[in-house]
Image (cartoon, rainbow, N blue to C red; front, side, top):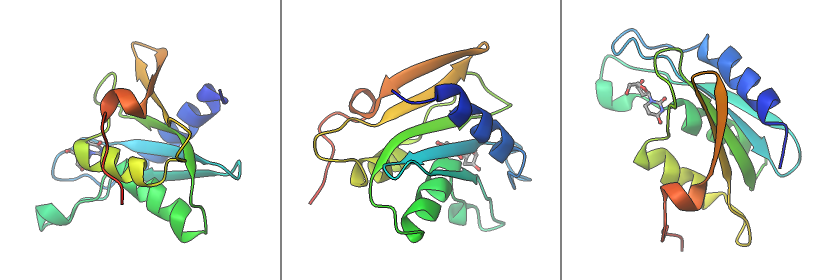
Length: 129
Ligand code: THU
């Protein structure tokens, strides 16, 4: 249990930095690391479409590159869609940085209400070496 609203507020703020001229679908994310620090990210698209990175992975990679190794919660927000859920690639990346005895909380917003789900609901039987 964490401050879901704080995470969502940060995800909303991050979505304003989205670089998404091709899809015009802005996304922001905020990651809570085990250290207690927050890391935000937005989707960053590219003319070579496959090079695009999602907001969630942007935020997670920022956290990991700052020395974090464990993520406990991720908030995701798009001004273009209610209940903006993480894509399959981002689910797998979250799974990599989940503590063995934990289940990452994923927070979305649906019609103004926060929705909290577990990574195990999104990605049962995840793969990890
Ligand atoms: N996108 C994200 O940022 N996160 C997701 O989980 C799904 C998709 C972005 C990628 C692309 O810039 C745009 O949304 C449309 O797919």
